[in-house]
Image 1 (spheres, protein in one colour):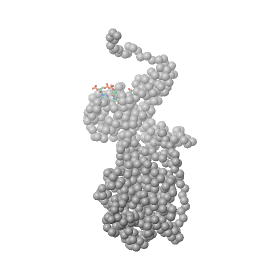
Image 2 (image 1 turned 45 degrees about the vertical axis):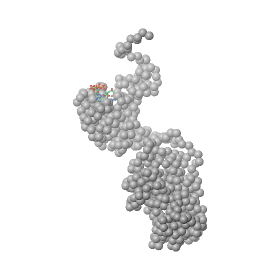
Image 3 (image 1 turned 90 degrees about the vertical axis):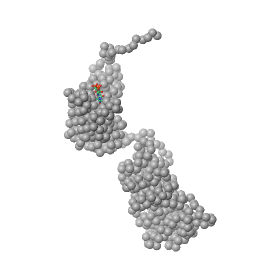
Image 4 (image 1 turned 180 degrees about the vertical axis):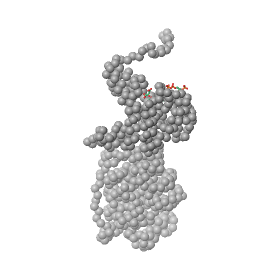
Length: 604
Ligand code: ACO
Ligand code: LMR
């Protein structure tokens, strides 16, 4: 791969380092990337599902995952891992990602990973043909395409250093600070950077100078290279060899910092762990001389570096190797930004016509669209278009549970409230408030417990035992008036629909085997309408390809009871309107229907 990153490159960012990620997104916005350069964030602690970032003046949500595997599974195209784990964790995170595969580049920021581990990690990456940037680095940049975290500093500095669009210099340094300094020097004396990498300051880093320079040799955007070495190590000699062997033909400008080391009595270690000369050939001076000998443009001092850059650049320009750059349009990141208080991901009323999950209302509302209430529920509750068999099932459920007469808890409550002179909405909510684990609201519980039993291969008897231990009646089993002798025809209808339209119904089959056992004890312990709905919804979601985790989340958030709530609302309103139409007086319960058992008061 000639270019390290493109404008489509996306990364998984390990650790929710909000300010560094925001800098990446500000960069993306500035250079008008179509997609954010961070596809996902791995945040091992905490329960949040996403992090909000600014995108220009607007905001976007970047999903959070608990581990790299989940993030990679959800974002298979993100082939860069930005490993911002601490030095204690960075090795494990890198090794796990290497084992997982699918990453072309892994950048490791941590400083101080034990050298033994760093060497093993780097060797594993090399064998897997993965470019490692770091450890102990700020990263790298492909200007106009992709920028790692804090490289280049603030957005103002980035634009001033022309890091917002590709130039023609390939820059490799060890240090991140000097990387920024040099980008600025190159911007002033030439046309900026085509690709730049700070390989990191540790003694054992993944990709070394030569790896990056060889890649840049193959990258047509790079017309010449700038290498900033430092005292210590022999990596510069590999570059010298590559030039001798003809593997590198593009002009290189280079300088090894640390020439001052010779004025000290003994080997001095500079800022980086690797910056210490262990032999004469590791001194900055020796390396500068050796590089000069093979035709690398080596200035006489660091101060002369800008002059040499200008000379090489102007030369290449005169030869026609480097052309003019048309300055691209950029977006300007607003100085003052305000985060939004609410988020909505299901509908949007800002355009000419409001949308449900992106679909204009008119595309689902009228009969000619072929869409029904099942489609609307799929869009507004699940943000997806469901296939016809699934939307038909949802509609069947809604219609099936719309009412079950005036005697049931909720209808009774709604009627009593209406007769007390309350409004439709007040009466309705009193009815809705009765929906719970005993009445109409056993659907989530049924799905949860039957799914648990099925997933754990419990026999019906083991399941009954398990529920007995929990001390709760099995949700979805039992009915006050329905029984084997007086079957609930709603359940019959739902089962018939499922057998005719569902691809498969494994959980229903399991529930029916449980029902055989419960009805053998007492014939009203049937699989009731709540149970049938909850269980078939799980079968539906599995057939639609939802993950177990997603299904568990639906159940935990009360999604299933919502089908009963939505359906029965129709019936409750009917009962309230019935009361109003009949102008029924206030209800008072007959006293002879109440067992009064109140102790006589003692004398006060
Ligand atoms: N799981 C295990 N045992 C049960 C269950 C159950 N779901 N339901 C009743 N039983 C047992 C009782 O513990 C009792 O046992 P016992 O005789 O040894 O003491 C026996 O069956 C008698 O039960 P009933 O009194 O006939 O049941 P009841 O009519 O009181 O309850 C009810 C009906 C409330 C629906 C009950 O079965 C229940 O709680 N089921 C679970 C909740 C549920 O699914 N509700 C939704 C119903 S459908 C709807 O509302 C739309
Ligand atoms: C209902 O749908 O309301 C019921 O199944 C409850 C009942 O007692 O009829």
